[in-house]
Length: 178
Image (tube, rainbow, N blue to C red; front, side):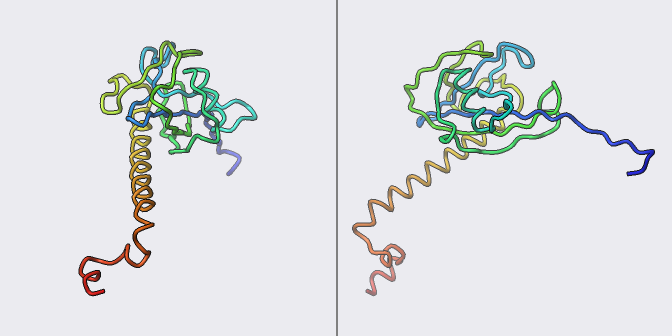
């Protein structure tokens, strides 16, 4: 850089969001109580405090905004959203997490949430804040992948006592020649 050039820095704010799903496919959302996106629905989340990891912030924000307590270690990272313009207040980068809780988990709105409620993933509200539709979509894909993997593992578990490793890979044609 020469003496005549100026370097421009952008302030970046660090946040965490958390998608909470039930095994039946409902997502926990909060209705925002202040701008931006006042009255819109959003995932629980907020700023990462000094000395805190994004995972710890996600667990804290979830408890503050919904009354749902999930240990930080039980949250699984699903992605980072850093698109410029994703927040009208400036440059925000969020790390999003996912957890699945029982369907009867009680919720209570708190902190900056006007209300909190369960929404079916296939019938989310039209007024979602920020880029939370993308975050919810990514969480739904992860949950579906987990359900598929769990189904495969469960099937393998039940088949393992009856099939040897070699038998599990034989085609019907190969099996008939044994």
